[in-house]
Length: 447
Image 1 (tube, rainbow, N blue to C red):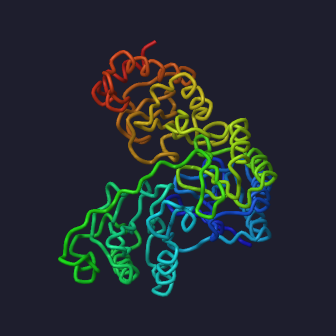
Image 2 (tube, helix red, strand yellow):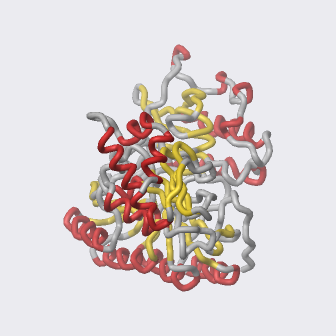
Image 3 (cartoon, one colour):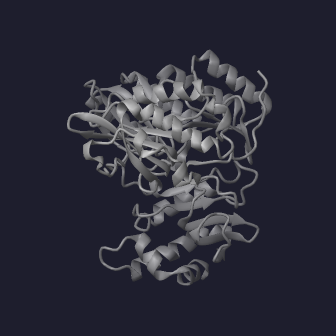
């Protein structure tokens, strides 16, 4: 199998990996919601054999394997095929990893999602839409899809014993532009009309770029009687880092990857333990999580302790969940600092700063791979050491600098400032916003 590297900004599929600072990267989205334990163990062994031994779960719940060469990426692809792992291609149409077995979901989104996938392929839209265009079909439940960016969002709403789908374009559940409520029978057609409007803008077109006049006319939407405007129901639940009961009367356990990645051998070790405790499959999930299915309440508790011992995140209060960090040095040749060691140090010493109100972004270089968006605090490795960006991205000019070895102490000084200046019941994010750039940068750089 010939593997060609993609340009940056495209989606690094198995057949077209993306060049990064630590070699080629591939992203896998299994057609099945999860992988049997034996298949995941085999994938971990292949990642260790052909890559740099690091596996990631992305914020959207995809599996990434890093550190590949052109030759080893082909060998990985051969292993994936031999393991029987079928991966999705074309426009992503995403649903909750627990779709159909989540006892709290408003509606099962799988039939609608599959109908949309088929319609996209039949219309030839995969060839005309850009590589980043995506659709989210959110049936609700315990795994929130609301934080995911999507060009087209369909969110289940129940009214008078009927299921409707709230259509919005270009954003998260909070930021997407509402279009209206669509009857289930009209949802596929209206989604296709919206995607056609995006395709008309060219390969760079996105949902956020559609002018209001290009959206499907309201007459094509199955609105409720009386033409009432209906607001979407936000379904942005917290991802469960615990054992929980599924609709099929079995239990699942949610664990997260610290900073989104783990050595493949540790994922394999957890999977071996899960299989020994009765787990049948493991599903990647949004929020950089793994869901281990087929457990009893007792075996889930045992497995949770094993996951914690291996270094996985098993509690929602873990401060590591508030840090986005790229692989950093020495894994990535582009990085100017050891991001993961720095992230671990900050998580240990400044847990009170990482109160869940904001994301601390730690980037080994100015590309900002781990978190392309703006954050209240971003640490960026560069020629001048560690730069601190306040309310910006890794590409923003830093407001202050510290030597690489002093970066953790610099964040510690910012945390101390927040402790001293914070008001009762004020979040760390609110305190940082009130303190302002100059004060934060001075605290970081002094010493």
